[in-house]
Amino acid sequence: MITKRGGLLVTLIIVFVISISLFFFLEYPGLKFLCAVIALLALIFWIVVFHHSVWTSARKLESRIESLLAKTHILPLEFLKKEYKLLYEHYLKMPSDKKKEHYPKLMQLRKIIEDLIQKGKEFETKLMDAASGSVKEIKVKTTDLEKHYKRLPAQHQKKYAQQVIQLKEQVGKGRV
Image (tube, rainbow, N blue to C red; front, side):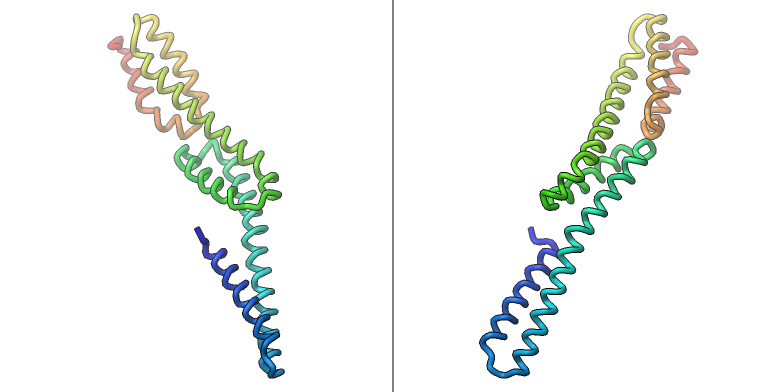
């Protein structure tokens, strides 16, 4: 897949090669000078675009990862997963030497997302299991569930708040 920058880089290389070729084959000094100027400009633009696409994207990736790491406790899980996927796609397009610099933080973000998914699954399992057993067992499970609920990130708490409230009401009324 050719990206916009990749297509621009290829176009600039083609312009450079054609300009240099014409420079050597033309006999008129004015046209030779024009071809030399075009080749020089194509080379300069190629360097600028290449620098921007490689090094600047690495800096942007770094700042986006750090921003997400700082906000993982308040951002929704689906948003984090989507952002991680985009960041990982950018990471794969980077040169190998730049990849080494960003790998640890990218994996740290991945680990946090995996932990959030795991905590959510554990809570869902405990929530489903909380309504079964004797009244004493249900009260113990509900207490344990509340402790687990308090340790969840804010986004998970919002997701399960209604279910926890309903379970507490049912336990309080003795209807479970």
